[in-house]
Amino acid sequence: MIQGSLLVHEGQARQAPTDGVATQLCASIATEDALVVIVDDDAAVRDALSELMESVGLEAVAFASARELMEHPLPDRPCCLVLDVRMPGSSGLDLQQYLAAGGDARPIVFITGHGDIPMTVQAMKAGAVDFLTKPFRDQSLLDAVTAGIERDVLWRAEARLVKRQADRYATLTARERQVLQLVAHGRLNKQIAFALGISEVTVKLHRSSVMKKMQAASIGELIRAWNTLPAELHERAT
Image (tube, rainbow, N blue to C red):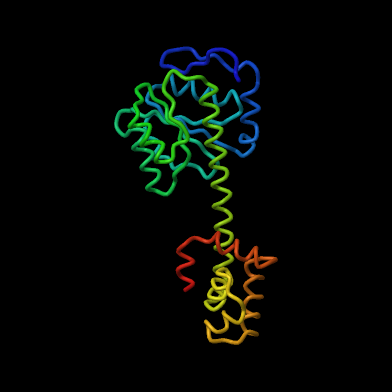
């Protein structure tokens, strides 16, 4: 843990990390070109939080309001948002809902000086990483931000995998998609042939083509590829 009482509070000086542990904690995510987005209406808090993130090698960008962030689309890189809950105009919770509605539900760490249980429950149910009440230790925030960025790195990797499989799936013919679906549901060649009204030889040819296009080395890999596809693609295969 970082030594000392590390408090982030309006108008209060922040002690910098002294033992290098925070840098170690953030080293791996820093190499992922991670960004910490801070939204707080208090300039002193924005500066303190930005300085804290940069002290452990994390790039930070700060905004004075939710509206200001809404006017600047989030970059295509691993990211964690640090949001003040209560701000003039749109609140941090409003911003969380706005991002989710737009399909960009990035990991969020909420900070507040006036937290209460209903607000915490709402934020966590909507997927927040953590909800910290001021004053809090710098290490608590760094831990939460690290967890958030790691979560975003994982989400992005999964999204890339889904897109890759969907792109491969798009190369299949309508018949090959039907064969893939039946194979994924454990049907044997003769069962697939009967269901589709074709010969077993034709089924084998389609299955071989599907495996090549989906770049699957085994039936197990082919099934995993199918399970990775979005639900709407499953429905279109029928």
